[in-house]
Length: 252
Image 1 (spheres, one colour):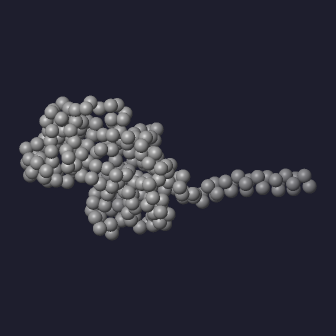
Image 2: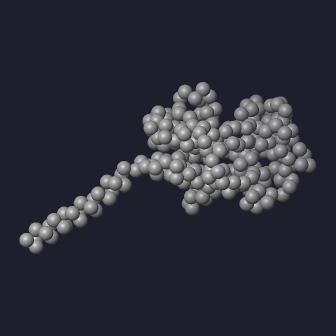
């Protein structure tokens, strides 16, 4: 009798333990990929600090039954995964034109999560004003290696503009400060973060016409349609949500 009760209790205890992972498996894990390894989007990858890590927290707070996490993925690797149709998540902070999908037919696109601009930055003592592509003729332009800058890349390929590449936008500002370039391209999001972190010298001039103004959006493939539809109403109201705006303001 005692042995029978012991076996029943042991069996009940074993079942209760094995049920735990089964319950946990009901929760769906979704990865948010970014190839923009720069502040404020990624401030510290090891400590998982930055706006795109906050974005995962925001989605976790809004959508039950899901666990979102943010991961850095180089652009070349991302392009390869898209090419072989093996992307298993969402790409954040991107624009349709960057993926040759202006009509938004190749991929599933969600609304804006951040409004940004790429600025023409020069020194106040030698201010640069952009009017048209020819404004860049004979100029040395600082930018981040591997980035495509429309209009500028074409001028460089024609030999009409010199491009000076560096590793990040903080270095672009440094190159301008040292007079090694006439003008540089810096995202206003990065400039605001750097200025908040460590007040920049008031020596920079912003062209009245920026290089580009764009919305950072979220993109995925047809394979993620179910989660896409769940995120749709959340992202549609994000830019009016105080919770999200508070997260953005931390970095500005």
